[in-house]
Length: 515
Image (cartoon, one colour):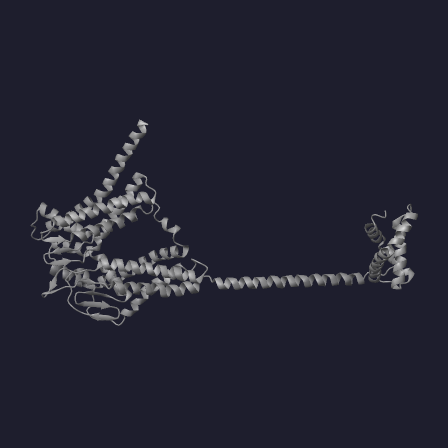
């Protein structure tokens, strides 16, 4: 019993250490990474003026910005935050949570909740502490937002990290039907396709604007250190640019300061001198609406993926609708994170920042996925109605086959009768068919005679107990048959010879008691 208590105590200490590590390591690693980036940029600047304490203090608001907490610089709020940092810290948290559940041996959703709650709670508390300590400094943040946003982002990342090991991916299967599950899988493929198309458009436009990018680097970031800092800035905002390109492809477009760009509209204006924005056009082009073909093809791909998800066309349409709804919701979340104010001004006029109309983008994403996807899934998949009709046709064919079989049997019987007609005649010159008919008539007459003369036969049976019934019955029956049918005696005798055993057997079965 003591050993069990000691083992439980050891397990408890080990579990506490693992939970402490999964809570603290992502926070410390992320903070150290951001401090390293800031120190590197400051050291490579043309006139490096920094201190270790200053870098550590500046890393706090940078850590909050990585978790999508808007920071206030002086009197201007910076809400347009780099998504690359957010993706990096989320990957760090997800990997740490996955390793923790593996070392702890957690396999159930309830155990996963312990790890997720620990991670989210720790990040929320750290964010609020940083916001409170930064109060009164040059860079500040709202403590309430600093508490909620890091907790939500880190909790979502930890959920992704433990989902496979703890069975969270299997959990919806008990509550979601097959059509919805197929729609969820297709939504992941559709969202990946939209990101790939947006990245392709951004890559092409940036490659065509390489000379402009070089000019912007020279004008706004001279020297190696400043150029390196500008490069890091462009890489940090690269996911934001991809989502802006997605807004352009879907149709509503985006607004950057006074500039508004979309496939069907264009309004020029001044933009920040960041090399990442070198690919922005200076005027409208008539071929831009042709880019609508990209999201339409992705919708076709979603419908093609779901073409065999169900034999029912309505179920396939429901799967496509689920895929479109999930993609629309994901578009809302991502574009909300990608937009925000720039926290600066040009000519005394503050920039409104990058505005992405989340509502319009969600509706446009759903339409581009659902309309072509439903069309393809409806036409290219199996049709349940056709299967029913085919079943009815098979039933009709079976009935026809049975009728044909009956007709063939009838033809076979006619053939047998014809063959019987072709057989040689009997000894007295009559046909075999007539003999068979006469035999049947003799049998019927014999049965009738036996029923009508039952009392006489009983008297005869009593008087002639030793006589053979098999010999007496055919003779009387044949005489009666000859009398009723009016047949010649010779023909009746020939008929009696053809089936004497059947008559005798029938007479024996009719009168068992008389024997």
